[in-house]
Image (cartoon, rainbow, N blue to C red; front, side, top):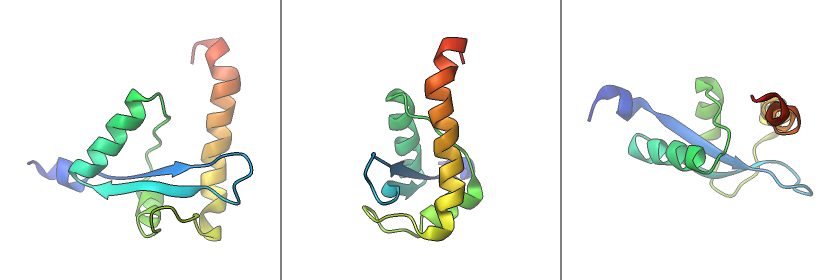
Length: 93
């Protein structure tokens, strides 16, 4: 296993209309992180790369809401995803 693979980290979030806040539904390092990313991409889920944010998300327990201090960062990503879903497809993005 190479160092780059071992250093990979990932966290997956879920947010549904009516939820109080996004919640962590999966997280991991190394091979587990690679699997999370692969499953997301195969499922057509947007994958955002941010070392700082993933480090903070790894501290959140599975099936727990993200803490308020992460709301702004996650909201910006969700807004971008929403924009892509609404406008990107018609523009070939």
